[in-house]
Image (tube, rainbow, N blue to C red; front, side, top):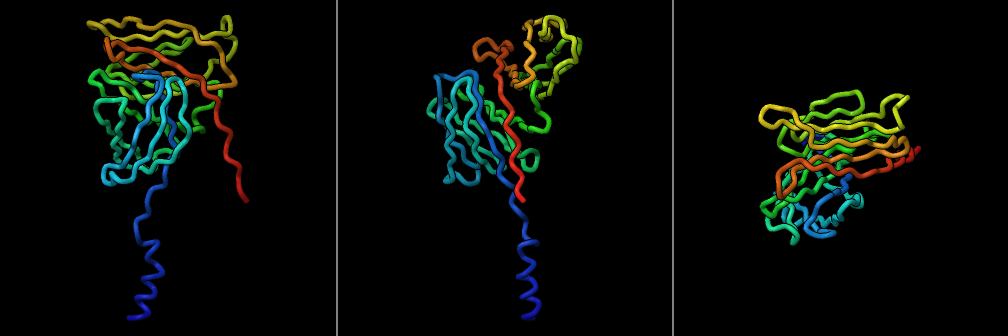
Amino acid sequence: MPRFLSLLALLSPWLMPQAAPAASVRTLAFDLPGDKASLNFHIEAAPEKIVKLEVQVNQFGAPAALAPGNYIVESSSFKLPSSFILPANSSSSYLLLILPKSDGGCLILPVADDSNHFKKGDRFVINATVEDLAIRIHTQKYLLKPGRSAYYQLPPPPVPDNRIEVEMLRQITGRWLAFNSTYWPLSPNSRSIVLIYPDPNTGRPRVRSLADRPRPPAAKTE
């Protein structure tokens, strides 16, 4: 029996379930009640373990580590607490999009920010509305479902006037109607986050974008 117990003690670290590693997260908000907000994050089952993150309009927050789990978020800038789920083992890096809601609360949308997919020159388009959106980028056409995101790469040259024609459409009474028409400059040295979200006052889709230079890969250790 002592020999069995000794063997069990040696094996126990491998037999016990291992906690999922924490992910690196950055906040990003395009609309806030003020220029900045302080948010308190805690896992639903551990309200005493609070992580405080600062959010500023049109700026990426400093990277912070969050363990996977069901989160509750409270802030004096918003009337109601919010909740979101940070998935386990889906990505090692996330953007936390902070969107104000018409009821005085906020929507927090975690979006995987995988540098292996999101490269220089790419556009990362996120549909944070509750409706299907049709998007034409140059000569390519896409249907982007609610809550989904997609990476769009630069079209091959030549591109007329070195800019990309973009049109975004939504369905109104069965017809696809444009709500945003613009041109994107070619940006081979940076990538851009493009967020489509409902205006908290009108409910109509709004578009915000922000350039983001990809972070260099972590140095390999011998």
